[in-house]
Length: 289
Image (cartoon, rainbow, N blue to C red; front, top):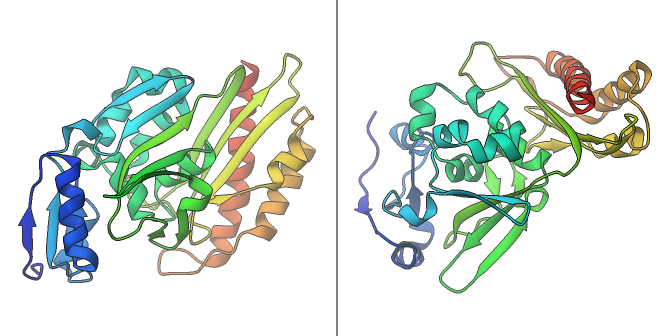
């Protein structure tokens, strides 16, 4: 199929893009890499009357670390993040997750901002942003605002982004001290969306007591699902098999995955427990060195 007829604009700066978006209102749509939007338009599941191409906004293509925060422009390609030394040195969890996104061609075209805004609950980048306690910077013609990941994702494919706003940056804090990370997912084949994914970041002291931990799962809820009980169960403790089993059982009781043609609710719940256990072990082992 082919997309419905639309007007096309390619601004070369953010103010012009925001002006066009404001004029278009609900009839306008931003396109960057197009990895999610183009297939939806081809199937006519989305029929915007106005398409605003922001590939000319080169100011939104950057990766930098300042004041213990990594900032990534929304137009930065996923492959750039995969190859970035700044990302590898400061947020290795993100670097580990990116190769799971589609294939090389997908990552060469897909943008960081596009994946975050699309907000697929099985996608890798929203899950990592939630795990690391990241934030997004959102711009409109009137203001800029910073939103926590936990407040940005509302429900399936729905975010806090308003029709006249553009996500311009993501901000990820750099964890200090002795830390470990882990990202794992199960998919029918490499490049497919995950049936279930798990992401963990952990900090420990010199004797292995957990000081901070964030664990999140993808593919089990309408948004990336942060396991808040991980802090309660694990902080102040050295990781043991008993604690791992306890938290895995909590996860199994907490998640509410849906059945579809790819996997049943029961299988996704089982995967959630298994991946919780594996990511906790790996993050702890890496933190201990």
